[in-house]
Length: 99
Image (cartoon, rainbow, N blue to C red; front, side, top):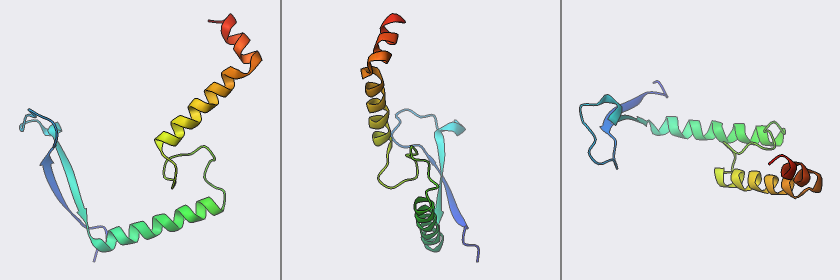
């Protein structure tokens, strides 16, 4: 038995009014994996994430694929870093002279 065998359905994209059913780009593929495949994939993913985290192999600024990290947390971090950078007196003077 192939654990990555999936049934594939092609459906018209939902939520878009007036889509032309004759345009191939207006369709999306939906694959339905077996329960065994989904379970195995989740188990491997969790084990790999634990190993990468405990071994310090995730870059400290990486937000993708990490529990508790999101695009929101990334945007907050970048905004905070920018504000801190602009609050430094030498940086603020340089910014004012070059604006």
